Length: 79
Image (spheres, rainbow, N blue to C red):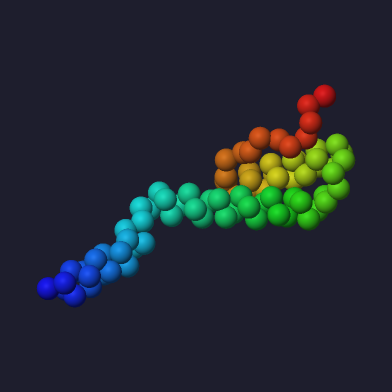
């Protein structure tokens, strides 16, 4: 009886990832796409100057808009 309960519990735990909601899956995919945009912008403008921040923000904003993703807060310092 105890083995049956343990095997049932393990089967239930293994089935949990299959129960992920469609919205949760979409959010995780969008985070990955946003990370790709951030990596591309960082690779294009690796410097840590005010000009590089502004150019990086513009590139990030453009990338997010092309992929129909929500915008992020700018990194460039306010003047």
